[in-house]
Structure formats: C-alpha cells, structure tokens
Image 1 (tube, protein in one colour):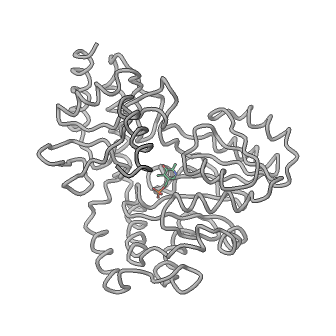
Image 2: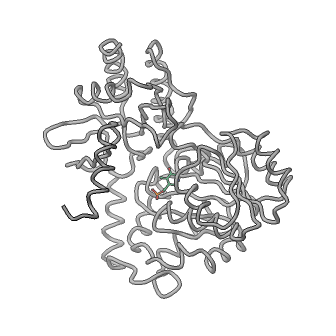
Image 3: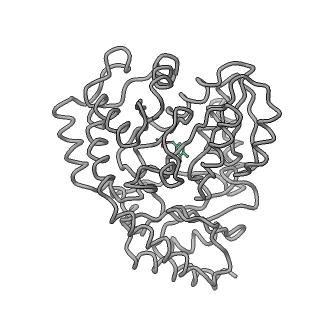
Length: 389
Ligand SMILES: *Cc1c(COP(=O)(O)O)cnc(C)c1O
C-alpha cells in the first residue's frame, strides 16, 4: 500500500471495529417510500422528501423543459454571467411567498449557511450564539468566522439570555435550526426573536426541515410560530427536502441580501446552479402553495405513528414534525437490522451525529407514505422489540 494510505487505513479499521464505519447504499429506484437496492425491496422511512414531490411529474417536466430552454448549466458564478432569468424569477417568487423583501439562491443549503453567519459576524470582536444541537453546516459556518462562538443548551432561552447579557460584542448573531434535524422539535422562535430584539442581535433561522411542510401554505417555521418577517431575521431554507429539487435560498431585508451578494464567499466563488433547477423550483413553489392536502395527510401519519408505537420498550422524542426519533440506545443497530430483514429501512443515527447514549432510529415520514405503510412499520417494531429484548 502507498505509505500515506496506511494511516488512513488504520483509522478506517478502528471505525469498523466500533461499528461506526459508514457505507453508501446504492438505490436502484428513484427517491420514494418504495426503494430497491439490488435484490432487496425496502419500504423507506429515510428521506427528507416530506411532501413526496420528488416524484411529481410536473417537476420532472419543468426540469426537462427548463433544460431545453436554458441549457444544462449556468456557465459562471452569479456575479460574472451565470445569473439567468430563471434564477431571478425564483428569487422574486420566493421573496413574495415568504413575505421577505428579497431573496438570494445557492447551490445547496450547506453553502447558504456558510454564506450567512461568517459574513454577518466576520470580525474577531463579533459573537455568535448557537443552539447546541444546530446542524453541522451551521457549526462549520461559525468556524469559518473569526468571531467567538457560544453554544447554549438546546432550546434554553434563559441560558441564551445570560450569554447575551454578558456580551459586549457590537455584532451579535443568534443562530438556530428551526426544526432540529435529529430531534424533530421546533425552536422557540418567538422567544429567540424577543431576545434578538432586546439585545440588538441578528436572528439566523435554518428552516431546512420546515419550509414547505409547516406554517400557512407551507411557508415554514416562522409562519408556524406566528412570527412575521422582520429585517432582523435572516431565513435560510433548502429546496432539496420538501421542495423535492435541490439548492437553497436565504430570505431577508434588501440590505442584508445586497450585503451577502457583495461579501459572501460561498455565493461569490461558485458556479450558479443550473437554471433548469430554478425553473423546477419555481414549479415546486406553486405545488407547495397548493399542498394543504399533502400536509394534512402527513400530519395524520405523524399522529398515527405516535399512537401505534405506544407500548414499545423505547419512546419517541416529543416531536410534532415529520422527523420522529425513536430513542433505541444500545439496541439501535440490531433493531435497524431486524427492520431491514423485514424489508423496512429506518436509518440508525449514532455518535458522533448525536451525543453518546442518544443513539436512535430516525423515522422520517412523508406524504408519499400511506397509513398502511406506517402501520407496517409499527407492527415490525413491536415484533422486533419482542425479539431483541
Ligand atoms: C439538510 C440541511 C442543510 C443542508 O442543506 P443542503 O441543501 O442539503 O445542503 C442545512 N441545515 C439543515 C438543518 C439541514 O437539515
């Protein structure tokens, strides 16, 4: 083996020994609750396609037509020559839909997050206040900044207030997931906004899992929490989860968006996403707007899962969203395996993604599931529970 490889091989072997080696599973079917990997048919509870839109023919058509009309790529970054009419139309439609003054789009949510926090809090004497359970991309974003980062206890407004009160930073930025990606609970957005106002801080909200699903017409977590758009709020959302396409956006005031356009490195130094994706995302936006039935079906499934899992030796975290974590601890891997044998796919989430002792099965529900699908999962979990314990 090439000598530099051997150290990497040793580390990988040690991960494998701990059962922590991660491997890619190749699916032979498009994103859907019904998946096939090689010979195995799987009923999947593993995607973020909360409204089941990835399979919507109107989106495939928009993508195909968008590509014939606008070509396969944008050819340059936004500021050079890659900002095409579909990008501009998508940004305007998103701003209108969300009620913010302006919007900017990105190739992914990861890049959108890298754009916001380090740009607002760029200086050594700025301070960032992050929920402890924030998504990895928000943590990485804070690391890219020279500012000091404080991490407050999950959802703890009192702890955050204390940190803010003790801070003398000129620019303070509060950063939070709106729906926490591994727990499924919703951040106390109204309380966070009150603190932001009181301490003159920006509030950055990552609504990757709320946009399209929560709130009026799927406008997201701010709407769900009764928080109207405000120039002090910067809202990020992804277009690859409920929206079923790919890419992301940041919605904010005119000033903030113009500032990001001029300063955010992950906007400036990357090729604009293919315009066909913006065409498809525009179609997705109107589907989201008309998806009250899908959202209400999804809510029925959430309630059904919660009642049908009662009596299990493990409990669900208190989550009202499509993310339903079953806290299975040491049994996580064997349970995931027992489910897989029964043709069910629920991802096992283990450290370092979650804290030690907090291993879980992360059940993701989608409007593409049927009630029968949910009941099949519940039956399998009850059976596997008896088998394992
Ligand atoms: C998925 C996710 C992102 C990243 O979005 P991508 O478009 O997939 O890069 C950011 N934040 C949270 C909370 C997420 O769950």
